[in-house]
Image 1: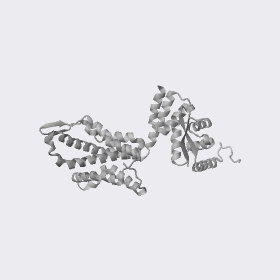
Image 2: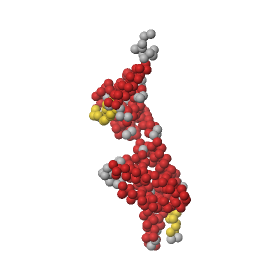
Image 3: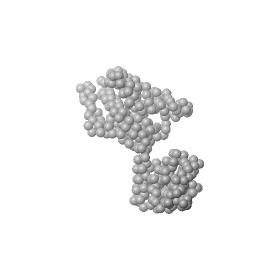
Image 4: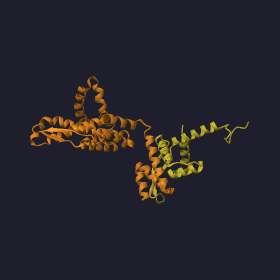
Length: 107
Length: 243
């Protein structure tokens, strides 16, 4: 099963689709969760996910905005989509009935 | 100047990560201090993660405890023979008698140094710096106290402590081959290793008695690793890289 941070990266990368690369994923995670995301943690997790076959990365084009440096583009693989879906379903099932869950059953 | 420092520190990262991280830092207009912090943090994190695997421990400790002493010993042996022959024409009459042993010692050094560098680079590429440091450590520590003399023709010839590092160029060649996934063909591997075994096995047999097999295999493990790789590669494909 995925870890929490792994799930965040997979979900944000899937949401960003063609525009998914290191800095964009990091900005989205920080914006949506309100938590700091370090570059080191991001890239080591991306590497781990790639080793597991859940992500695919490649070097994109260099842009002047990045000082002529290339982006590390990210794409979620079908295996990654499956793992993220599994994680989401497990979390959703476990959360039913919890006080903080928005869709808890009425008594 | 600050950019240059950041780029120099970023050399700690592999090329792909370096490019991506420096680009991300430029895109987010990170300050100098923040850039340094991020790069160093990332490099340390990567190193830490590497050491969670058995590979760097095996490469570093196993090489340091077995091969390094053999390399130093062979380096000094070869230097002693070479220096005594260099003593002058009077010494040359003994060259034919000592030549087979000397040639075997040179082959042994070539095999041991090349295989050690190759194994260090192949087994744990990211912690190669540590494996090399452990391999060179004993030579560096012996450097100051090194004092070996060879007597010839009533003369005393003092060996330079640099002979302790005679194996270094060959080891660097092995490291290069390991980093670039080059492998010698199986016949060349055997050519490297057989003279090494021929000389090592009888020596250790005399010194270690019945446990000689174990004590032979221990320093020989980088060679065994190379044979295993070369034979496996030959089985999978006949297009093995030439050395």
